[in-house]
Image 1 (cartoon, rainbow, N blue to C red):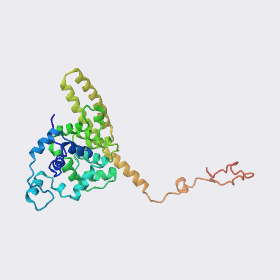
Image 2 (spheres, one colour):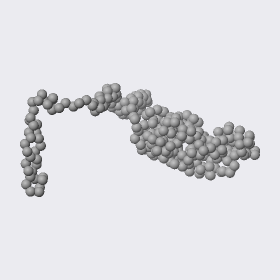
Image 3 (cartoon, rainbow, N blue to C red):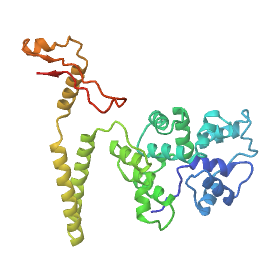
Image 4 (spheres, helix red, strand yellow):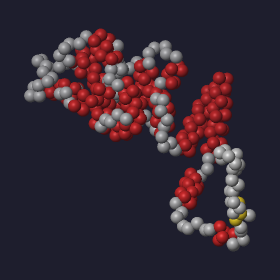
Length: 308
């Protein structure tokens, strides 16, 4: 598969038209420093030829209409205007942990508002939805690709001839390989080394059952001996998951039981006395305790009052 664009396409355009006249090596070095997806030098040359900034080009002058129109058309005006929101978005590229969380959540289909909330919950960092939207537009624009291209780009980002186990353990590659949804979010969170919160386990198991059923059908259609082995393995996993789903208690019943326990703990009615419980048919042994000899108060145990 040949992909001629990068999720950081607008940021690359900014570097290509910058008045400093950056060469390809400087551009690729800047992209690698910010951990953004680079492009080959040949593709950079092709895009440089396509771009035609006006002459003269004054990107920092608001009243230069030709320059302003060019920046608006390419979607990079905010980069030259030093917008504070854009500045915060670019600072995400300088913090690898934050950048990973943002990109994984975007790959899972989360909105900027959800990404901002998830980022604070997982890392404690507070960013606005506007900052996330700016990062998505300038540095991680997935709308430029179909789903297959996204998977290809995320795997290529890890390098060529990478061990498949490394690909499977990468949070971004995992998020890109799965359909957008709750399952994607759970697995991607695990790949980032965090425990997902507030999981609907029954829904998750039902999703796994659907995926496994589809994989059984896919392997069975293949017709080869290898496909038959894969179908058998998927069928075994499907049987286990099916038993798990069907054996799960009714969630409504579990909620009702929990509410009943809460009511028991919160019951403030008067507790009955022993006399009321036994109908006054009880005695209490109140024999005096045996005094210990000497200073060793542990040598003789004092019998406690006993109910008869």
